[in-house]
Image (cartoon, rainbow, N blue to C red):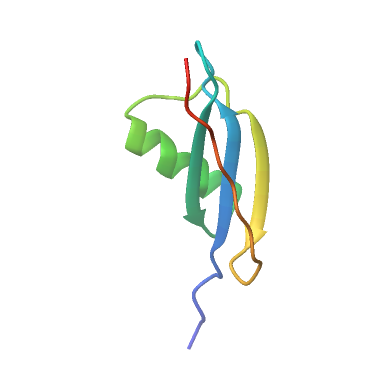
Length: 69
């Protein structure tokens, strides 16, 4: 039996910047699938992805995006 591909966490900081930078994340086996999932969730093609961090799910990590005006 074939194993399902291992999922990774993909995090984009600086995602779709307008007045402020956004944050996007997806759990997927590869970056292409992660981007497809995010575009499907958003409902349109993303033009500015920002900085990508890719982590295996057995890696501890924390991210934060402060709010403000």
